[in-house]
Length: 381
Picture 1 (cartoon, one colour):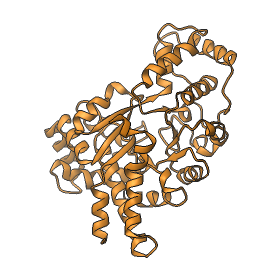
Picture 2 (spheres, rainbow, N blue to C red):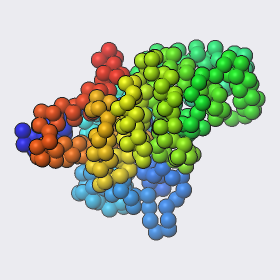
Picture 3 (tube, rainbow, N blue to C red):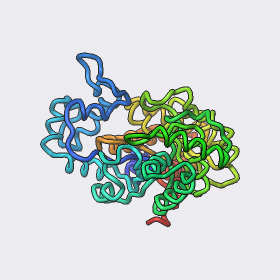
């Protein structure tokens, strides 16, 4: 097989995006649109935009042709074309062009602003399934009129119902506390006391769960469900403290859950993706991806993908875009990952280190087969 043949094999691979959010509902323009391309909630420096970044340049290079524009079209022309096509058509084009066959959608982040799994499936013409966020379920229970003595049972019931059709659960304890949490499950008394304190603070508005005892309780309740359990690790918006999102901090928790045979999925990783790869090598139940780092590093994404292939067994690495909002991100995550994989694997084949057959097999493992196995997607089809 030639280099062109390897690239064709990667380009035609029907991907499983094992952690993604919905595309944005409705039209967005100007600053609201550009905000979808940065993890910062603050405006860019005067005279610049959020598109003045590796991600922004990658959008103009790779997404512009999907909208019938030349590569590297300037931001003004790009936004005007997007406006002319309308949100529905833009989303349809990018989702269909991504080559993703399954979208596993985390519905816990501003769900009212984005497409749910059903609408993602309709827009893309492909399959979609739900990932249930533990903290969101707990917060829904909190506003339902529950008291401290009822909280644990009501949460268990709500999670049972929400997880019936889900393929995975997710925790954002990295945001709400950090990954340096006490790994042991809390006692019934600890949960009741913490729930009482938390619920008393929720006088108005939507409660936000940050109590470390309750966050641990959610994790262990999730473990009891037996579904793959996803964790945000590594970088994100400034709501987190980065050094407390190093996945090595949760090593004791990984040891405790190992015998439960619950797959633990470490998402995003950057700049701790090498650490995540180490954990995936030494623990049989740990998997990882480099997620949104591929989009945000743009032209440098090849280096990130290469680093993700250094240490972990290839059966432990998955593809994810972690796209949220502008549908460009759903498409771009797939494009940049395909380009990086074809380039990295092609280099190893050309150097005689790998065979073509092995390169194609690993691309299929990472791009689709591992996720299909771990999330049992053949049973969900």
